[in-house]
Image (tube, rainbow, N blue to C red; front, side, top):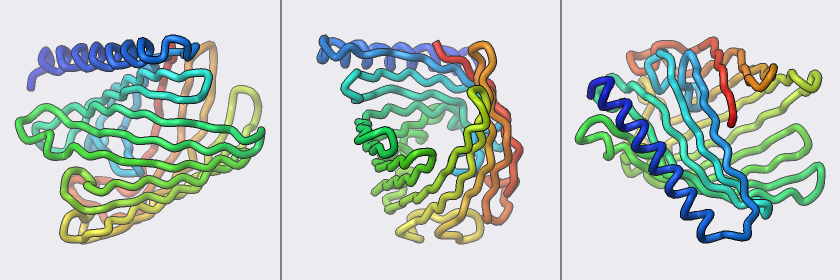
Length: 241
């Protein structure tokens, strides 16, 4: 797929996401919902510590619809590189967030991941559910997929994050998570690994409407072609509209 085709696919997917959000708004005309768009540029697209772009930069777009009753839905688009002709990831999601009080909140949702660029790319498509608990500045999150990356095996992630707010513009996140394949015949990482640990220390800073992130992330996976580095310096710039 050439650059013109990639650009056309981006525009088509953006249109599809916004069309879906339009229909959601039509179904819930009294929801008093807000739609936001976030454009993000990063030096490496990491998914639970594993590069989705072979350590190359990624341009990402997220469109999110959220009602005052805390239902939300949206879409996400990014370039990817798995060493083949698959070069676009396009996801859709929906969920519900409920704050019981100022200290405790729960988030539950469902995402559909899809891949494009080659005739076989859609074989990687899969769905995933999540359940997240927020207690003050600490988050305990769970994800589960019954068909991880379309290979037919179950997979889950357990994540623990804690955010330290330095001031109104700066915060630092400390996080660790574990990804586990429930079927080694369907999915493994690296050298026959059925699970791995990912850690991160990320700082987030906002200035005049620009959000910046800088930090380090790593895993305990062995290095391979698809996993060229076990530790990465990550930097990103984003703007929401």
